[in-house]
Image (cartoon, rainbow, N blue to C red; front, side, top):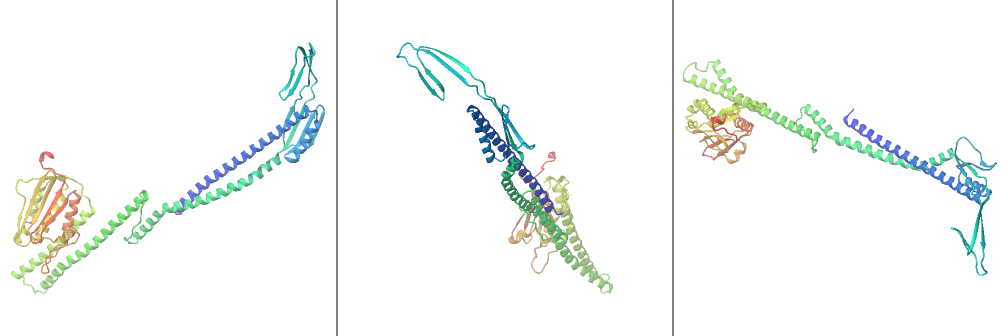
Length: 488
């Protein structure tokens, strides 16, 4: 099962659970509210019957209460039974059953009170006044008065029993709950569909980049490195896509590098190999003298061809090593010793071309805390490049200096110089400037690229200053410096 399907099902299940729980909660709350409303309505009916019973006793009119109960049963079907007890007389409306919700009450009758007022008139002008209101009776008299109070016998109390049909009450609640339930279900279905749509969209949004990445990986597996995964997010998936694109870019560069290297080495090795093969065939056919100047010239040519192949393979191996490894071991390296070592190494080549190769002045000692192999690789490639492009009888000067900004060394030559438009191409792999149509400069075009990469790994940079016809200066500048032995 795909991740998108799993994520969609998990999200949809979670949303369904939440919506279902909310729907059930709302349904239960509505049912409780309706039951509470029904209960309050029954209490209101019962209180009304009690008040009317009190009025019926006060007015000595038992038919008033019975008439009211008969009318009440017609208007309220849930009132299935009513019983009125007065003394030993019992009046029943309806039949008493087991499933009734019973309400009972006893209404006490008020005792009649008789007040007798005796007054004594002092003369004919004196009058008594009597006013009756809702607040009571007010007697206004003058003179002396005597009041007597007599309480009569209290009437028998009324016993009330009301029976409400539970099934009718439940049916009324269900009827009132039905439209609310339909509305709740409709809202729940709407939010379920909305949630499922959101879950599918969310799963597609989240797993879309992973699906694209999976497709790209499958394409790379088939050997296609011309792929790119569009990743715009900054989350972990977006970072994964960016790293994948960087990896594919590096793989493409390495593949292109190997292809270019293969083509270059094929060309560089085939040419001297063809010459060697021709000379060997001539030697086999005994068309080359076994001694004398002609033999020495042939041997020198064959030796030059072998050296050319060795140089090509050495450059390729050095670039491969620089690309495949990261040499991080560091130690104190004396730059003047490496410059002098390079002069000694290339002294025979310079002597053969009558080139003056001058090391830094004695006493100019500077050191760096760096990788000695990378520094040696930079110096050897820069000096070798200068020897290739310096004509016979020219000069090559190596220099070294240090100040508060850092340490730098340079290799200057009196060669033909570099055109301004070619300066940006110097450190490109396999780039070689041709010295006219009559002479092809030997090499693979990898030396400066190797030196540039090594300087970059050490945290330095190579600066080039050149004027056509006036030579070239390659300066290697490092920001970190150790200028004194006591700094070590």
